[in-house]
Length: 146
Image 1 (tube, rainbow, N blue to C red):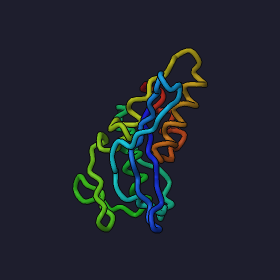
Image 2 (image 1 turned 90 degrees about the horizontal axis):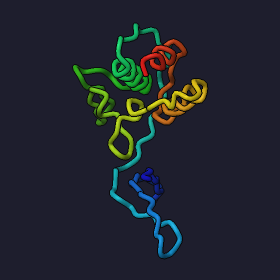
Image 3 (image 1 turned 180 degrees about the vertical axis):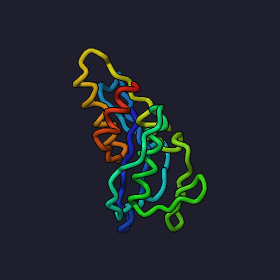
Image 4 (image 1 turned 180 degrees about the horizontal axis):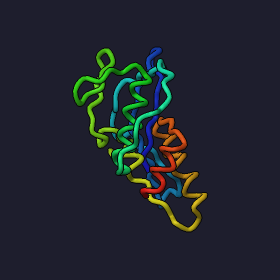
């Protein structure tokens, strides 16, 4: 299982991809730093605009719209297919909005179908972990597509 570790070095934060592995012979887990991901940049939410856009028909379209809205609320400006803030550039489409394994976080969510309530909670958690504030109507529309 991979995760991102943030280290504070001389007052700056840096992200590393870390993987846990189980060593049978030693009966313990070990962590291995996979690769350096870069300097961590914290963005402050500058916008307070409510989400009022019409929702696309597909779950991919809904997720892309939510990502774009959230970045705009953090001071990004749309230029063509890119969202830019100072020297940061976020390229659309959604496939660029990925987790530590390079997978689209929201799009890989799979419901278990045993308990709809648990699936809804798990999806809400996935949105939160992706850093997305999702309005109720958008959440319901997305949930109905999976």
